[in-house]
Image 1 (cartoon, rainbow, N blue to C red):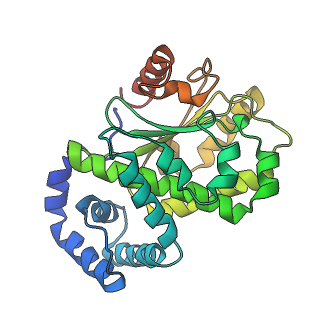
Image 2: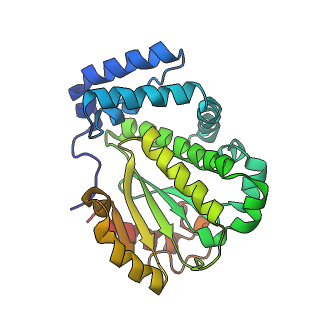
Length: 282
């Protein structure tokens, strides 16, 4: 079945969850004077598969993070998105420059290794090829915690854009991940880089509920592919549903910026969009 976070329009979901949204707004305004204004931000908590007490507890801890430890990340993302959309399109430069520890990270993590693009149905696709990143040199200059903050900032930007687009399109927009493992080292590589990615992913799941779409693991080396098939049945059913393994997509892409709309390679972008349609939306 074609993937979608919900088969109902956002306007219907907001209306059905109006009381819960009002409760969460009250919690938010009791914690900060700068509570998010858009309904979709609150709606995602309402749609998480937990009871009301757990929903309120998770929401409260997120709001405390957003107004405390995570405030600089959230503020930077909000300002950067304002600048990125100033001309009506999307200019990614302000977003890159405003990232935590940008002066170090942007030397190593560039659009050749990580991009976010929009699928044909309107979801966001966060695409990463770790083998294009000199992780050994990068991790000599930054701690696991600081790099994890950089990735959480990327998630905050994607979450905010997904919420804006959900309102515009009346469809609940998700963020799917395409992790291209071409050229990945089976031995070696920098374990602390993987640790930062994994820590940010765990934090992202807590901070941004009902946002993630499927995760594509693309072009695994043969040995890894065999191990993945062996261990996948051990994952919970919910996780198994969201993970897809595939050989081929992005194989002919050298630089991830080639799949961006407008500035990339139109043929390579179309091929990647065809792959997403086949794997996720058909």
